[in-house]
Image (cartoon, rainbow, N blue to C red):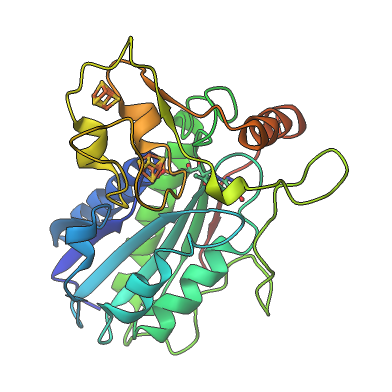
Length: 278
Ligand SMILES: Cc1cc2nc3c(=O)[nH]c(=O)nc-3n(C[C@H](O)[C@H](O)[C@H](O)COP(=O)(O)O)c2cc1C
Ligand code: SF4
Ligand code: SF4
């Protein structure tokens, strides 16, 4: 099949999904002699309109894994406003060295339901949003070599296709999809008020540049008082990791317990994985 455009479409709080999806789309576009285009749906304004594709488009579509799934507050956008109209797609998940559980298969299923034909898939390790040590520096050179391999193989597969495949690409994960992963305390009980945790601001370090408020994917930070998180926080950590002064952090007891537990339990190197049948 001939492709006119290869798209990098992604949500990426701390930049790891962006790094993988843009690299993969650029390489596939080169291999296919197609135009390279990007669309980032981090900000609420970018999720207002419909995003439509069609035959001639190959869409590398990436989200991070949150609680073993596609981030639940992004699902309405991906499900209701993104239209495949017969385009080809590759679902891509970034996970923080614990596990991608059903994040990739859920993304594949949603894209298929949106009218895409999935041709491959990939789950890659990124530094965990909550941590500077868990998956530190990932995706690294080894991960990016796998990204490049998947890009080349996808382009080769697409070139050889006579028509869009009717059967969804195989990716790891369970059917039916499992419930969201629940952070638990030392007694095995769900961590109290985990979902309510919000970042706080070190007023000695903050220079009130307003960047965190402009970057917040939920528009949750008050631009007139950046220490105030007035909206729903999905704990994407964009504000924490992108604050130029290191002024944002979480002090919520349950959040910190979960962070440290993850850092201890999942210190081993998890593997990135690609899924493509030629
Ligand atoms: C709320 C939340 C939940 C997460 N849940 C998981 C998880 O279940 N498994 C995992 O390995 N990483 C998990 N992560 C880590 C992210 O998937 C990982 O850091 C990813 O690389 C972030 O992508 P980004 O840099 O594009 O934002 C979670 C991160 C957040 C913010
Ligand atoms: S990005 Fe950092 S320094 Fe800038 S307003 Fe936000 S907390 Fe303050
Ligand atoms: S306030 Fe919450 S949702 Fe907004 S950028 Fe910070 S961590 Fe992400």
